[in-house]
Image (tube, rainbow, N blue to C red):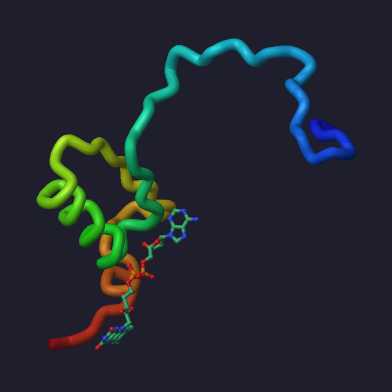
Length: 72
Ligand SMILES: Cc1cc2nc3c(=O)[nH]c(=O)nc-3n(C[C@H](O)[C@H](O)[C@H](O)COP(=O)(O)OP(=O)(O)OC[C@H]3O[C@@H](n4cnc5c(N)ncnc54)[C@H](O)[C@@H]3O)c2cc1C
């Protein structure tokens, strides 16, 4: 356990080696449904210069609207 009785965390016993294949982003958006796509759009238009990544567990984007086929 990394903690002591006064609530201060203690250093891990062995420092982890920095991983060279790790990429940093300012924002991580979980899900490419309409909310995630909108968040990406807002980031591009309102937070210019901020980097982001969208993590989507499915092959397709669109979330519910990709899953459910609604005749319009
Ligand atoms: C027929 C129908 C009509 C609707 N009509 C309306 C309406 O009129 N008005 C309205 O407001 N809403 C309506 N809805 C609801 C609609 O689904 C939501 O408004 C909208 O799609 C929600 O979008 P979302 O991006 O928040 O979520 P979702 O569409 O659910 O997208 C979430 C995404 O995140 C991904 N995800 C989840 N967890 C993880 C994880 N741990 N790691 C990686 N990816 C993850 C999922 O795979 C998914 O792609 C309707 C829904 C249906 C089916």
